[in-house]
Length: 202
Image (tube, rainbow, N blue to C red; front, side):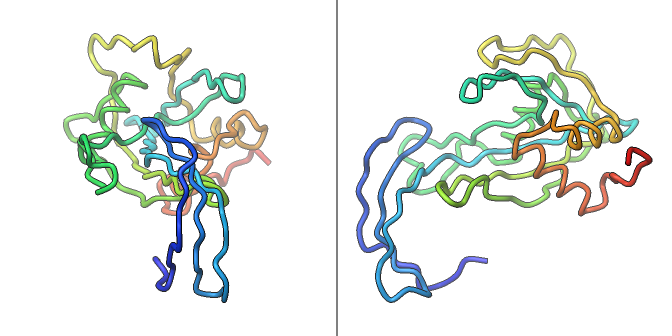
């Protein structure tokens, strides 16, 4: 829920490119008598897709992540682009659902089956202490491999395969899965009853 009575007294831009903007804002919050100064990273919203096969497995990708100098297992995801001049107005160049399906195809090489559905699961904030970036969660089920899929080498995706829910449970418990997007969507899937981590693993 968006609270009322937040006012930006002033804003100073330090850096901006096609993906993010760094600013220092002086903000009047509902609970403070004086404006608070905070440096914020504005970043494009993202989609995170949980691809579920007909037999209930979840497809993960293994991707190289330069900031952490590691390759990790994670859900397919991607930023939402905006039309020219539209970022400030909040007009995406595609619907969020179209972006989710595109990322599913491009990163994982999967698509919805003919009887498949894309289920929105709400959104979350990746790190609200410094950025307003939000991620939109989707469950895609059932999914099937795309015919003749060729992965874009610029994606730095090393592997892609389905995992059972018990395997994902173990990977989370043993810190093999450790990115916020994947942990967040797994929690949402479990809370909504789409998967269950009640298993003999522990």
